[in-house]
Every structure is written in structure tokens, then in C-alpha cells.
Length: 109
Length: 116
Image (cartoon, rainbow over all chains, first blue to last red; front, side, top):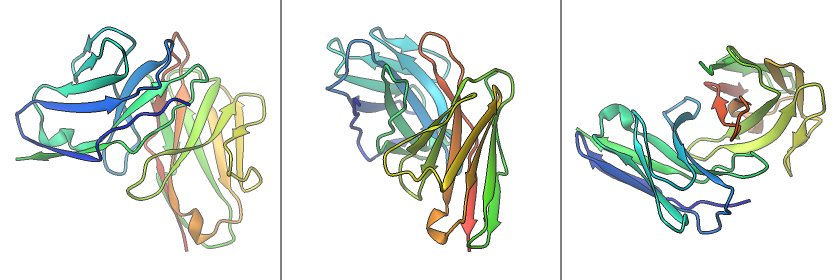
């Protein structure tokens, strides 16, 4: 199964943009890139997904490298409620979600 | 839409007893549901894939006789932890696959199991 690599933790100041990177060098052509986040003691929450093109929704933006070997989740204005563990997941043909370690985002007031 | 619930949200039991956790897709039908386990400060680990009307597929290292999974309908899957021991204490999370082009999964809120 394709794997992803993310930094263990990141910090951001409130109201500032946050760029969360993810490396997925073994991605195959049919793998979708999904981002989820998990607040403490809760199940993961869908954030955004993409295949090749950059994507925007009300929560975030997803920038995908041209070779698709990396992607970046962009939170345009971090709030305290965005403090969570963010997971970058490749959705393979088997549709099994393989969670990596994720990035623990800390937002400073 | 696409809401998944779990019951109970928290359970404490004595060692040696069995505990059943329910996972329901409230507003869509899910032919496939997944069960994950998460230890403190760790990531989610897939335990098994539950398919409606058929036997579950367990990941390597997960004891199928200990973690019984039943997917009796398109909206309900249950996980029973049999003869629970303290090392089974964990956060159990289910997800339901809605289908479509990329079969995205929607996650339940999780069940905190504590075995005394």
C-alpha cells in the first residue's frame, strides 16, 4: 500500500495561514489524495481530496505537485478550533485507508 | 448528510467480559464498513473490513475470534470484543463507505473502551 510521510507536528499563530505538507512518492496514477483531521477523542473528519488538480472548499485548499509525489493542505486562516491531527491518506484501488502518523497542528492564540 | 454514529461512546467493563459496539450509517446505505483501533497518541490502525452479508476480512495480526464483526444490514455493523483484557483498552472507530467514484469513508465518533 502506498505510504505518506508528514511532519510530526507544526505550530501556527491564530489568523495566519498554515501549510501542511505531505510526501507520497510511491503514489500510483489512480490514487486519490485525501486529507482528514481528528480532534481529540473524536473520529476523523473529512477535509478535502484531490487527484491531479488543486482543489478548494470552504475548509481548506489542496495543492498537488505536478508529479503528484507531494501535496500541501492549506488552511487560509488558522483558528483555535483547527488544532487537530491532520492525516494525508492515499486512497488506493482497494479503498482501504492506511493512516500514517499525521501532523499535530498547534494553533497559538 | 453522511452521518455515522457509534454506540456506546464510552464503556467500562471487567476483564473477561464481552463488549459489543454498534456502528450505524444514519442517512445512507453502506455495503462496506471498517473498524479501526487507536491507542493514545498513535494513529488509527485498520482492524477489519466488514461487508454486508458476508464474513469480515481481518488485517494481519488481528484475532478474528476475539474481535467478532457482524454486518447484518446495510446500515449496521457491530464489533464484539470477546473476553476483554486490559490490553484491549483503546479507542475504537468505525467508518462507512458511501460508494461513488472514490468510495469515501465517513467516520463515527469513536468508542472509548476501558477494561479493568
